[in-house]
Image (tube, rainbow, N blue to C red):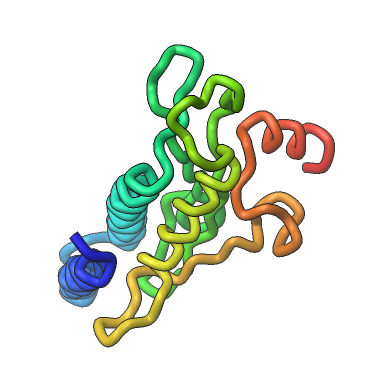
Length: 170
């Protein structure tokens, strides 16, 4: 599947679900907290699908990092702001932090690039899938300014580096 097809499918899905949520809101079929929770669930579903697609693309090109137990290392997405509080409204952006489990680079026999770069490639694709405005609109605006060290910080960091940052700076 091509990235443009995935982008279109995500946008069509979002538009359909947003229309459903707007209808439930204006007809008072649902309470505000239910609309916010469902909008948050919609964003999470779109993020998960974007991560799945981006991971497949990057793995096909560069190989796959593995953990000590031999299982694939996966990108972790931490929701901050309104999404993190399960209170996303129809016009909210999504504040995300990306991290990955620590991998022993010396044990990576099938990975053509280092883990940091591998997960950065996935994160870049995820942001593009969600944030890029196409003829079908966008899925959600992605804001990365809440990541460690803000805009000057790395897009993706290892979980241990993230914990260290929070321990020392947050």
